[in-house]
Image 1: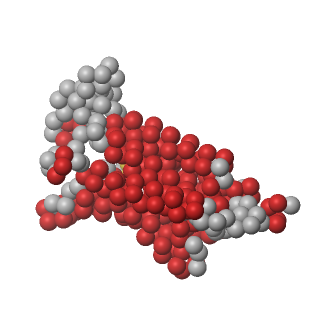
Image 2: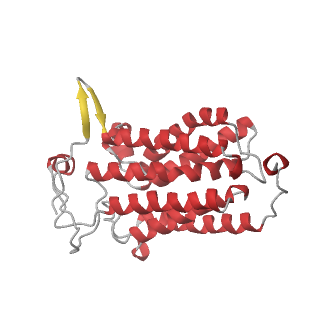
Image 3: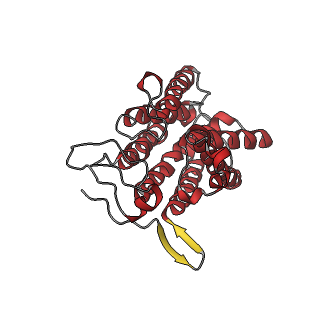
Length: 285
């Protein structure tokens, strides 16, 4: 299957270019924000504990989260995958419209933003992370679709009938050559599993099992769930250039995701053992 002639620029007016990559981030952040606001307003989700913040506070927090995603994602990509840019081409670090964003860096950036906001407003950081985790797969879904349109982060060679020859003018311009042969569309696998499947699991956890009342469990499900999916999909995703021969045959994505599984499992275990407060009288009524 031949990769389409996608143009990463949706449209351009003079020097201003609107790119699919940027729109993916905007869509993920805005939809995630509205989803989180909807959860805060749903009193049935907070039968034993009040919501972790007000909707007005959520409106303020979204700017902090956006900065955390962009700064953390870009710095994470540079530190984890392309540290040579720091001394060979530092200006390239600023060109985020070309792609090159790390999920793990973005996640750490968001955690730092949440921690600062929680400290400044005397809020519970763990419960803020629970709320953010419920909405995070929305952004992951759009981000992986943008990776596919950009023709980046393709998979390893495959003989499967849905393998894709990742080659078009944009890929040639950016990489200088196309990868040989048909490849796994690993970006679409990640959109389906990190995005859609993980969102549905968290949706069941919040609206079905009402685990929003258990401190840290939603965050634990997201953290462990993402880690498991990422480790599995790294087996079909092409390793980043220069990082093909890491110790134990693992990839950088695996090394960064395995600790997430352990931390997530611990958060779930801790949150499920913690006794629930009595049901709130205003909700029960």
